[in-house]
Amino acid sequence: MNNKGESVVILDKKDIGAASIVIAHSNGWLHHFPSNLCDFKSELKSIDFSYNHIKQWTNLSCLYILDSLNLTRNRLTTVSNSTFIGLYSLRSVDVSFNEIRTIDLQIMSDQSLHLFNIDLSNNLMKTLDWSNMIIRDKFFSKIDFSHNDIQGVTNKVGILLNNEVNQNGGDILLQNMREVILTEWLSDFADTIEDYQKLFSSYRGTYDLKNTTNIVIVE
Image (cartoon, rainbow, N blue to C red; front, side):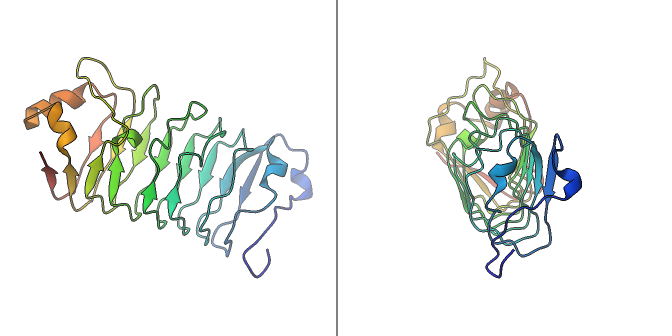
């Protein structure tokens, strides 16, 4: 690694030719992803670059057998809906404790993706879109948005809820947020708290709002 935080991966001799490898460099001074990650595309299963200073994503689509990606406590500011495309084997992503303010619509919706767990907690997001919570034809275990500053939930893609059809999905964590404002879109489907409970009873997962201090429905 040079004094600009740029780096390349050099394998130990014992790892050369291994069927699968883990690349880990935490509590360091990385400012960028190593430039030669794609050299290990056929054996790289796990990346741990936690506790570094990475600000920008790089194209990771070459890493088709990557299973887990740990980037907690870096300085990332966004997640785009192309960030994970091509990562067919990716199951777990941790980008908690970054500086993420925005995420694109439908970050998990591409047909190449099969994410089970994604941790976006303890970031700086102020809005969420339903397209990142209700994901058509996808099952997942958990998406964690807890400890953000979420103040509004949008529906820019036009996701439709149907209380007669089971919705795919998983557990959504929205804990420890100051206020969640549900916009008038939901009022097209429900008028009372009981209506909301019925509406989401068909959803295959849970919404955990523990310690979120205020839920406002704006019509």
